[in-house]
Length: 293
Image 1 (cartoon, rainbow, N blue to C red):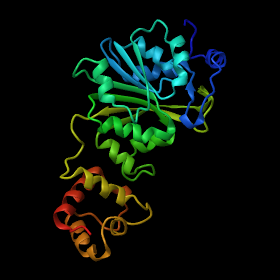
Image 2 (cartoon, one colour; image 1 turned 120 degrees about the vertical axis):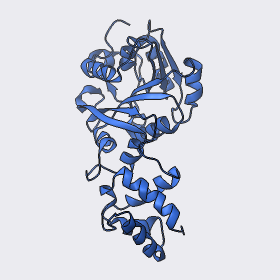
Image 3 (cartoon, helix red, strand yellow; image 1 turned 135 degrees about the vertical axis):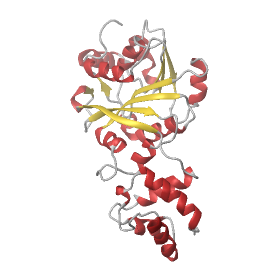
Image 4 (cartoon, rainbow, N blue to C red; image 1 turned 30 degrees about the horizontal axis):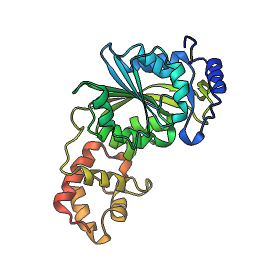
C-alpha cells in the first residue's frame, strides 16, 4: 500500500472498505498525523539493528514508520478483526511480525525469544489504550524483559502522573512505581483532533529510559510498595494517619512516631511530599522496628 495510512482520509477509507467498526471498549483511536508519528519514532532513537515491540498497531500507521527505521518490528494486537487491514497496510514491510492476542495475557518473553536474537535490547513503541495503560506499563517494567526504552502515547493526565515529583499535584504511587524502575520524560503533548475517531481528552508522548538498577535499594520491594500505596490512600490525610488507617493498627502509633522522628520525617507531612529515597528509608526502618498487625 503506497497511500499514506497516516492521512485521515486514507484511514477512514481503509476502515470503510473493510467494514471495520471501531470499539470504544478496546480504546481504538487511530493516530493520523504524520508529523507526530515521525516525532514518536525519532524519540525512540532507533538504529538499523533495533528490535521494536509495538503494542496495539491498530491499522498500522505507526508500524509502517517503525518498519522503515528498525531491523524488526514485533507487533502485538488484541483485535483479530484488524488482520485484513494490517495485511493491506503492511504489504511490503517484510520486517514486521504481527501476533494477535492480549498483551496482558500472552507470554511476551516467549514472543520476543521467538523473534529476536538472545540478549538483544528491546525498544517498546506504542499508542496505548487509555483503559489499560498502567497494567501494560507495569508488565513491561516488571516482566524480566530486556527492554531498554519505552516510548508510548498515553492520556495527558497519566503522562503527568508518570513524570511528577514530590509536592506536585500529580505525584502519587504510580509516579513512584514507574520512577523506581525508569526515568520518565514527556516528549510532547498531542491534541485529540489528530485521532480517528477523536478521544475525549488530549494525549502525550512519554519516554521511559529503563534503569539497569533500581532508583533506590530496599530490603523488601513488596513491603515498600505497600507502604507507598498506604501513604497515598487518602491524599488529604497526614502520613501518620494514613499509615495507621491502611498499614498498622492504632496501638502501633508510638512505634511509628518513634521511627518517623528518628528519620527526621515529620509525621504531619502528607505522603505526596516524600521523595522516593525517604520512602525507601522509611520502608527499611519500619520493617526493622515496627511489628505488623
